[in-house]
Length: 520
Image 1 (cartoon, rainbow, N blue to C red):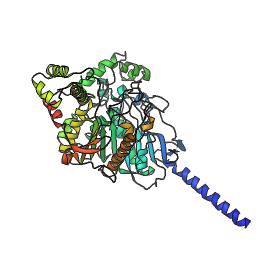
Image 2 (tube, helix red, strand yellow; image 1 turned 60 degrees about the horizontal axis):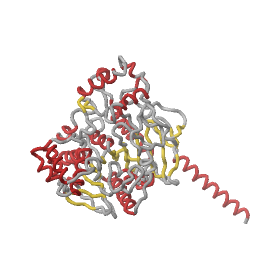
Image 3 (cartoon, rainbow, N blue to C red; image 1 turned 120 degrees about the vertical axis):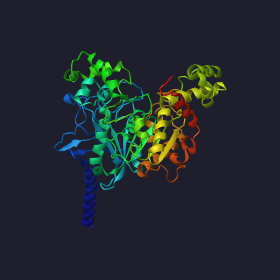
Image 4 (cartoon, helix red, strand yellow; image 1 turned 180 degrees about the horizontal axis):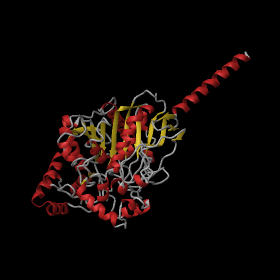
């Protein structure tokens, strides 16, 4: 009898040992450069592999150059901690990081997979491009990390990329060194990350042939730009854009000839005589100098290589990636600015001052017959000019020439008060992020309601369904019609529903009056 108990105990011990070994093995993955060891997160539901280099550190002679492949390593590399974010200064209070701090050595990405992923599972892959005006942000932000999106059966990849002066300086010296091309290093970093995903993600259980790129704000601008870039085509099969499109002057894509002279004068103002001296300037010196130019001091350029022509021209010719697109924006992207103290009388005066002979047409699409209506129209107009109009132009362009399904949304659920926005009641710019990633609880100072949890669950399902099949629809979800077939918009609110687009006349008016860029 005792021997049977001993044998049973031994067998149980061996079984647990095998299970532990299987877990340990599942946390070690061999990439092209070498093996890495990750960790279990979310109470063991998810594997996280953090701080994986997808390019060599862009320092010293590699500053302001295209990314190059990372060097291989021997042994097993620790992948349990976030790598540094790319150089930036503190800009927005809601940007919180879990990494060691900013560094030029920042070209790393993070991979999250379900804990029990079979190496041959070939799950759909979602590659996230963070926002921040091409000037701030990083992969370690809590609203993007450890996301329950992964529990919906996808592999999530969050990337860093060079920003600001390090990512988009395009001086005459750099133009000469680059044989006529300069700038766009941050966009090149994104392409390098996609290439890393294509080469390595199968080892994490992902499908390199089913990749969705998605981003918000500047990240969405980047998605629309990379869809138009020959360098990125073929590296992704679907695209999602949240609040941003490179058809807007908010984050301009300038001709290189215009930017090269301007950036050359700026870099020379720092007392350097050539690129060698510029590359010797400290990170802090460059950041402090760039800070004086503001958030949008350095943005993409038409370099003739990665961006070959104006983005709108590429889409008009149908030369962009013909992939399914899901895109939209939030109701109150830039509310509370122009609308402060707005009345019907002031709104009519505003229309006359800014639109002259077109004032009555303006008031037909942005009405202000009552004070309350004027406030709403003022919020609509500032939100349109900030983000919505450019995103709409992108969606329309893809609808006309993209030869693939297009789905459009409008995020409308007013957020509860938070530390960032003590006054609730608006669907602000970036308010959608924690809903998409299922990370509501990381937003400081918010008390979430049942409708917030419900909408977040719906959005995670929509986004991951789209990543799987190119169609956001699925069991238990309100139907989301194709915009390219019906011109119906999905309203993401307390009760999600679709209805015909009612804002088309607004944007046609803005096109007609060439008001784009008038931010007020």
